[in-house]
Amino acid sequence: MSLSRRNFLTLLGASAAGTTFLSPLKDFYQRAEAGTPLFGKGFGELVPDPKGIFDLPAGFEYRILAYSGGKLSNGDAVPLSPDGMAAFPVAGGKTALICNHEIGAGLSPGAIAAPEFRYDSVASGGTTTLVLDQNRQVTEHYVSLAGTMRNCAGGATPWGTWISCEEDISTPRLNGVFTQKHGYNFEVSPNGLAKAVPLKAMGRFNHEAIAVDPATGYVYQTEDRNDSCIYRFRPNKTNQLVAGGQLEALAIQGQPTLDTTKTFPVGQPFSVSWIPLDNVDPEGDTLRYTAQAKGAAIFKRGEGMIYGQGKIYWTCTSGGDRSQGQVFSYEPAKNQLELFVEAADTGILHYPDNLTVAPFGDLILCEDGSADQYLFGINPAGECYYFARNALNESELAGVCFSPDGQTMFVNIQRPGLTLAVWGPWQRSLS
Image (cartoon, rainbow, N blue to C red; front, top):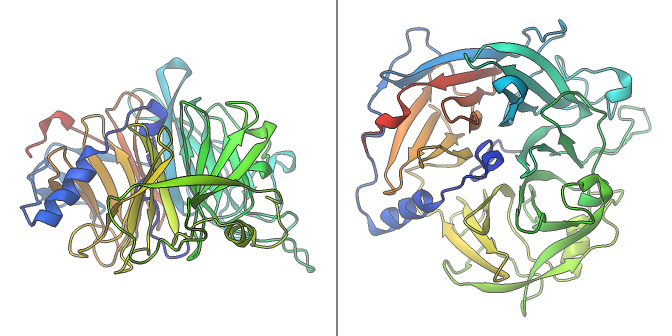
């Protein structure tokens, strides 16, 4: 993501378990608009970390699982810039934590794999996978996707894989910097390294995140551009994205090429249509222009995306009259789009980032603003609270998600590149 405001509504980890509760977010904004008190007690006041890394409420602990420049199981260095993540159950009661690395060409340390597994020999992005035992100890740490560019967000699928999205549309250059075109999605298994295969039928553009409707297997996608589109991919075979399918772009019926970024009504449903796209793998960064020429709606910096309660939710980070962000929802059963909320106050949750749904029903959001960086919680009553603080520096927090058993939270401090496990008395919310 170009301005580092990533996945306000990307359900990393929780979507893998098929559990989603969006009412806390809705109630939070209803309370904000009504001017009622917003802050609850959450898990209590944050206790300063004597190590100066991560402040947490009393009773909670953390462990550093990995750090950029550390050692993978094979002795190679852990790549830079950990970002979006999701956790999956694997054999032996273990957990596989798949982690994006938002790095580009030639940066070191990058995601390194044997040539036959790499997509582009120059690109340094990809994913790593940490395998954890039931005591939160790392038993294995390896590169699971290599040779890709700026792996920022993505999404977990109902069939138990991670879709890692390239937020980059670089192409081979005459001087040979790149060997492949970029701007694709890649599917990553929680069970080892496989050859990196671009899912070209899903479109070539500045990808940000995806969400899958489990009822149909359709994959919805955001694009991080100031004049982006919302895309839908209908696979030829459910659960087999590599088998191709039809890419489409969202249009609002009766209002071709409507710009949703300004003066768009909150809470008013609009019927939509889906425009089939033909040349989905263009040479240039032109797919959105092709879609808009056919009537596709314009969204400002589409970002995080999740499926929940029969709807697809996504954010537009810079959209809205105040350019502080919008949250849209689309209900497939009714084929209707709605502006769920538009940010009206920068004083609370200003530019939240990655988000997950906790097993106890609260939403946990990463902050990526200025100065101190927090994890915020929002409970079902719509009250928010501070859950954690980056005490190390002012780097963004990213990739928050929970283990399959709900007992461990995972989160990244993107710079210098720390992956943390957090645990404690989750049942003790005081709000």
